Image 1 (cartoon, rainbow, N blue to C red):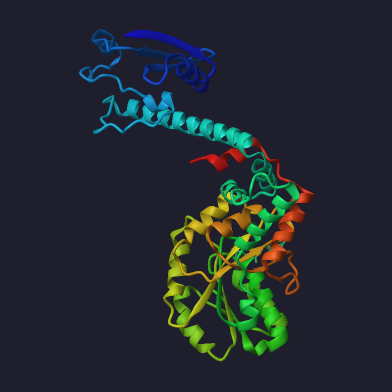
Image 2 (cartoon, rainbow, N blue to C red; image 1 turned 90 degrees about the vertical axis):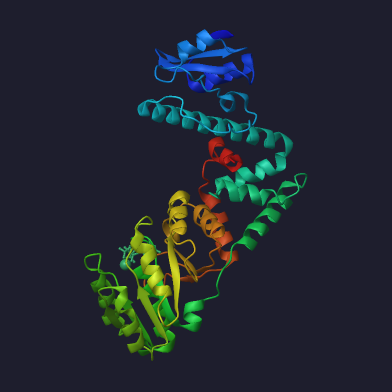
Length: 394
Ligand SMILES: Nc1nc2c(ncn2[C@@H]2O[C@H](COP(=O)(O)OP(=O)(O)OP(=O)(O)O)[C@@H](O)[C@H]2O)c(=O)[nH]1
Ligand SMILES: [Mg+2]
């Protein structure tokens, strides 16, 4: 058994050296941080009992050190039949798990980097389009699937037209459902995204054409100071009845009382996605005797990961669609469009300003795409390699 010591500035470089010089069958005997970098001890060849004894910690001497082929060879290896803890000390196991996790994510990162590099060579046309989508803030996975549908050899303008047409086809919109059909509507979503303002805009618009006596607003927000007051003040100004409830449990009675109203909008309190009350409230609405159409309210300036958390939190719950607020505050529509496409949520309305009821628009795929492009052209998101490489993460 041949033992070698490697020193490098970081774990990534050390593993790369080991991989290049010793190939896939090498055993990592130990690794540790030293002054100026990391040190790895490796072994290759037939196991040497004395050596293994030396590097196997006390209390677990009968076991040989784990071979870490995945971390070095880059080739998939069959999983061991019965994984056993290498060290009996809990602290050491936790530390090892952490280190293996770090190595795994490092390798994933490297692999996606290689894959992006290779993609750029193999399909330069598609790679250029992917860069354009990244600059528009489109999430990497959606971007990759969109460029995958475009032939690589096409001339750039024709290819980008084809790609944007595919993107537009993926944006699903409802055609003015609330103002056209009325009904019982609930607006849910994270805190501060503009639910109450949207409820006021919809109620205000509807009352302009059908009369304020046909509309009612219900505030169920007993969480935030002044929340009930916000709707009541609006209702007084425009002559729309506003009812404040202590909880959604009072809804069946109130909805029955408003059965003569064509449009009833329920303004829900804002929730953090992780708050179990979020799902509970939506489940309560779904179980009400009268049909309530619930819309998720998403803010256009929220980043993609935060939006993903929100749509994950409502996964499986019956939502009619969503509304996108604060387009005027967003730098790009890429993240919010990527999130609604991934969640297959149709968009009903967008808002781009605080004015009630003026700043409200019926969503259409054409308008959303146009806004995405014009906002992206005005202020492109830097298409950093690390961001694009996420499109190639498995
Ligand atoms: N710039 C801009 N501001 C908006 C828009 N919609 C709402 N706002 C503002 O966002 C702030 C929060 O709006 P609310 O309607 O109270 O938000 P909410 O979701 O009901 O908030 P919570 O009930 O606390 O969860 C207010 O200052 C609104 O005027 C919009 O489209 N653009
Ligand atoms: Mg509110």
